[in-house]
Length: 185
Image 1 (tube, rainbow, N blue to C red):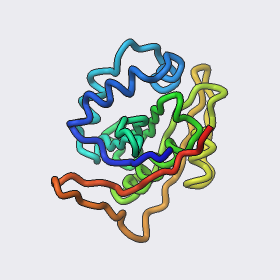
Image 2 (tube, rainbow, N blue to C red):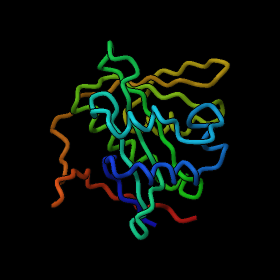
Image 3 (tube, helix red, strand yellow):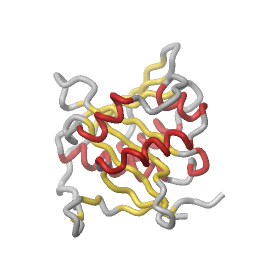
Image 4 (cartoon, rainbow, N blue to C red):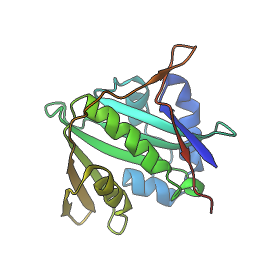
């Protein structure tokens, strides 16, 4: 199983709805902190229309079928703090624990560094700190803060020594060029 990671495009709208529908209610609740019947419209619009400086997003697609199996986003939750981005990941249940989230995170962190983001925030439910541990392995140790609702990790991002290479396509779209070999069950 291999997934290809690329920037979110407006034509991913229906694929993102299908991704959400393919996730279990538990996976949705862990990502959005609520049981939702559908992908939140405002969130979807922000993904599709927001400039990367405000809401950067990538999808992971099954290389064989083209089916979107993951969504990663890094949003600026407070525009008065443009140096801080908040990471969110949603991966279809059958593709979890196979490196898809790690691959999307690597792309988003690299792009954030180029844009000058120096602080990264991620919130997870109690008992679900694998994302925070993965971030620490990737960007270095961070601070954690626990509340009744969950755990928040705060990480410092060093600035890049070289810009992120993006690959352009014949149709004018941009592709980050990453493929993730997913671990098999």
